[in-house]
Amino acid sequence: MNDATLGAAGTAVPHAAAGAAAPRQSQFRLIAACSIGNALEMYDFTVYSFFAILIGKLFFPSDSAYGSLLLAVATFGIGFVMRPLGGFVIGNYADRHGRKAAMTLTIGLMVAGTLCLALAPTYAAAGLFGPLMIVAGRLLQGFSLGGEIGASTAMLMEAGGVQGRGFRISWQLGSQGIAALLGALTAAILYGALPPDALESWGWRLPFFLGLAIAPVGLYIRRHLDETHVPEARAASPLGTLFREHGGLVVKGILTIIGGTVGTYLVVYFMPTYMIRELHLPASLSLLAGCVTGVVCLAASLLSGWLADRLPRRKPLVVCAMLFTLVALYPSFWLMTRYPSVPLALGLSAMLAASLYIGATPMLLVLMEALPAKVRASGLSVIYAIGVTVFGGSCQFVVTWLLARTHNPLAPAFYMMACGLITLLAILSIRERRTD
Image (spheres, rainbow, N blue to C red):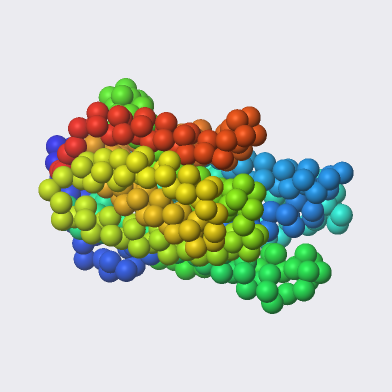
């Protein structure tokens, strides 16, 4: 490691020494603390999507049911707009004041956002105040998540030796699978157990209160973690240093995550809608697809972390995973459209999701190891927030527009193949390091 920090007595010590206490922490506590924020956001994402029709009806009255749903979905998408700002502000804060401080801040903001969603009065009860609370909740959640990924992933990477980095970071992505599974199961239980009037009156709020019940546990654990990064005294702004010294890497990093981001939002989130509307499969498939995807994402993330720790280089695993995805996309969509059935659609979707997540953990490692510790949280926060906002946030809109414009059910595959090719070229251009 080349960078140094100042110890308590003012003497220079390596960054590794700053995190020397971290390996003694409980691995379970570390992983739970660092992944719970990302998991909570993914849980809220899943729950909101399953109750979007009800939320649209209650908070965004319109002349048509489609208009209410569109407003509800658009409101959820507003959260993406705040991610870059959160990435800039909180990422910079994490590099200037430490990972622990930033992670405590992000989960506090996330709780406030979820509380807005859970307590918002309906349009019938409070007029515009209700929809405004929904919007405020999504803005807070988007802002917090923009900085969450950089700070928490940096701590997972730094809290231990090089050999175990893959396993630790894989839980950041694996927690998304757990959260998606829990969100789908919660929605399935509520839809099955409650009558429609109870679900509309109060039942849809229960999943958000469940998330609120989990969040204080994460906040408590985070407050008792050992810091892994002590910033340099009187150092320049991490954000300014990032763009001045590593601007090219930031651009390459954004291009690197395009394929995985578009693939995730297409295969994991848009695919149930695609199966129902384009393949005319039963509507109950959406809940089943959420459960299957959650399990696959968890298993593939942990497997990729295990592989990343044992392979001499990480980049070949990323390249191979993306190449497999590109080769498998067209045949998968062709088979689904030619022989539409629930088992085939779920099996092919699971295969594509697995290939995407197999490459995700080593890709994160390549990016994190390429960034010096002093700008690591800022760098990943900015890369992730911009990439997800621009390409993830627009994915479903672009794919829907392509389907309507071309009337070709294979259009989503072509779009994702184009994005995957960009990612492939970008990852090849990044120099792989295994130090720091």
